[in-house]
Image 1 (tube, rainbow over the protein chains, first blue to last red):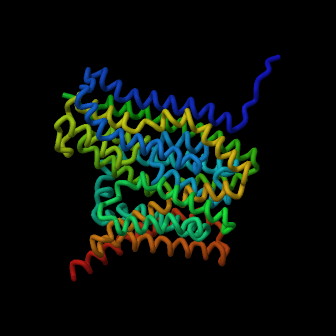
Image 2: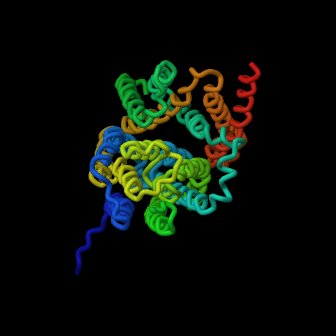
Image 3: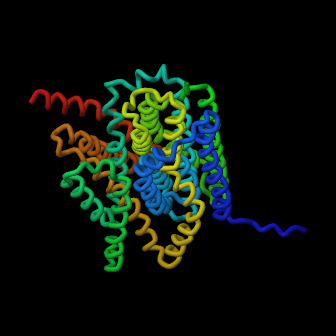
Length: 223
Length: 246
């Protein structure tokens, strides 16, 4: 009789997650490869490395930081999915947090893990569907998407999202929220340079400030 | 001449997107099965799926607008692929701009018809952001094990630690809302929209707790978001008229 080892749910998620994400890497690499091979159009080394130098140092660093920041929130299944489907900070992470809050579960628990995965999977499928329908019906949708009347609504997605999300989480965790919130408000208000493009780097900065202040309060039994 | 909008490009991209959908469906089914084992009710699962789908509509339309922004330069299929997976508009624009600049292409409103230019941009977009796809399979299990260890040692601190991480994210984005206030009254529009969103969410909370409208609990954030986006239109018009009137 074969002695088959039964994998736990977590082990299965990591096993299949690795296969899917490495498959995604291969499939995504296939797109520029096929274009280069089919049209005999491989990039020249000079312009390619020059362009990479303008992108890689920042975005590779952000990529590493994002892994450390978002994976604890999203859980294993959610992370394997979200890091393939993208738009993590503006869509997948708030979506997962909202779903866990509504289902009264927490990140880092078995229940939180599955609710986060269900939320991110649903969100990914809907995103892909909306973009696909939009791309295929673009001639029909273009007047709507480029409408001057609707422009303010799409310019204000982030305040509309984080105002609501913020009030829920700050009211529940105001002690932990105080230090990073104060820091970010001061930074964005006082800074002489436009920081809007650096929010990806500022998320982990906010997380570190929150962790340090939470640790101090925890040690002093203030939490 | 290379055509970024060729039928072949559409088919290639559609196949890649099908892979992403298949992965999402796979994890969705797996998580639903696990949820049943954990005695999470079918109605909670259903509500999570519906509420997450509704929540996604507005941001997904914004992503679609990003596809439109890049389509004049790169055609539709490549931005469709890039913004359906991995990337966000801020990154894809930077990568495309960096690659175009290195090739001496300065006008991002003219469709690329040179295959080598197009392939260079496609490679830079891909390799500039692929770190997650390599590092996640290597490190995710270790990170999750570390978190379990923190939880086993001290559950209360583990909860505070995770809360602190997402409070860091929320704080950064709330700070971002104030980024333009130095430009004058128009720069305050995002702040007003954020306040309106917070008030609507507060009202939703009252409706759930005081008037016991339980179904609203799952849809409070999507409704708040869409209502605030809708109200941002009269807010913007009002501020613009005040600025122009003054």
